[in-house]
Length: 265
Image (tube, rainbow, N blue to C red; front, side):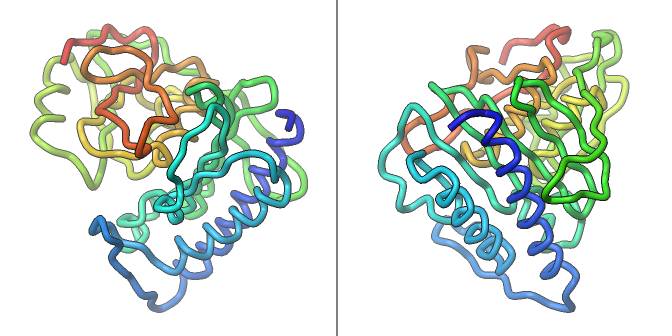
């Protein structure tokens, strides 16, 4: 599998999954079930998962695949694998807030190296190219051919007045306490992996996450941010956040533009 072969496939599958998700999102009603970990799942999660999984297995049958909706079947980790969250931000989807994304990423030796984040309700598509750089593609989107796209890069932050993005659905006092260590010019909130993308484009400088996440929640956004010059580190010791961990659970982390002067935990 080459990057040149990978990128068109994950881009197309993200767009096709987004179409499937929007069909359900725009319906009058949809069922919501609760998984064993008490997180919600909808028909949109399941339909998008099936579409992406089938597409990736057909295109890259020899590459290990990890998806959120089939996570119970993933007993082993590997050095190289594709990792998918077919609908990141299910709570945003259920409440019809629009801040949900389709996430597909490639992890190599613990590092998300390529990825796509597509927010179908927002009409925003972020992806890494074969050379590792990140672009935002302008719609309307053609699944078979990339349209106009512009390179995105992180901000040159002003540490006397930072722009901070935080979670819409998972904000807590610990997060606010940590943000309080910085000089903040303005704050915004966003759902799903869009928070990584806002740092990637320079719309935000800093995104701290002091809450539970899984690798499929973050890998694609991490790849997009890295391709724009950003970094993601563990909250506790500020070493790089790595992937392929047992159970695929993440520690708390900080995503940021490198000019940000990070405060200790």
